[in-house]
Amino acid sequence: MGLAPELKSKLRITPYAFCLMPTPLHKKSSITDIRDRFDNDVERFSVLATGQSATIDAPLAMELITQAAVSVTSPIQRVLDLGCGAGNNTLKLRLELGQDFDVDLLDLSQPMIERAVQRVGEINSGTIIPIHGDFREIDMADETYDVILAAAVLHHLRDDADWEATFAKLHRVLKPGGSIWITDLVLHEVGAVHDLMWQRYGEYLTDFGGAEYKEKVFAYIDKEDSPRPLTYQLDLLRNVGFAHVDVLHKNSNFAAFGAVKAL
Image 1 (cartoon, rainbow, N blue to C red):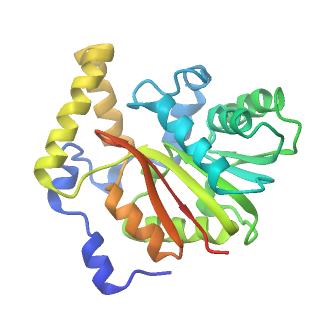
Image 2 (spheres, rainbow, N blue to C red):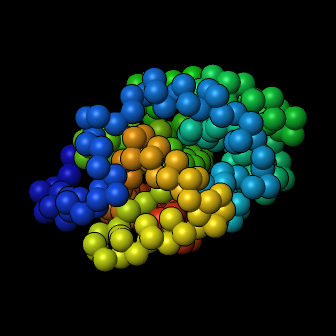
């Protein structure tokens, strides 16, 4: 599904949007590069209480998207955890829901999937299906999932066509009445706001781990990631067919938001 010309113009990223990320899209990390980094970083993503340290409000965002999923969608019988990492979001959803469900754990990293299967299996007796690969390349049946969780994964998408096709597929594989809940790094449409929020994020990283840590995080964001503004993603969710879109939380360069598919 493509964007209408007037909406495509509205969603176009302005030149300042990548001012702190000078690496052009065609020189960003490959899927193999990203997979290899996460293969070697399983332990950092295996702590439910803290989530991801480089992400502002990660525990709160995880709580909000899982609570929203439980509040909005019933019954929850089958879940897709997209970019599942070590399984934190599925674990949190199981705790919030209080009952078992079937879940497909999808990630580029096989070690991450193995840890997620082990951890989720300890508290959830539903069917657990590991899926190793790139969501964009995996065949999936229409109207399969009640809930999709996508935490810190969509910022790896690249150009407009990639974003549009992926969001359309997310809509397609959800059941009618199903919902998707996203937490991610975001940019901003207004240049001054963009600069302000990156400054605040830099201060957060410096306070957390020092100036060297900040530079390390900024370097891998530049190399690996190509995030889009929250406003862009909300418009895109509507454009691909979601009936309702909402924002749960935003702090600096991170947001938690979601959408519901029409019945």
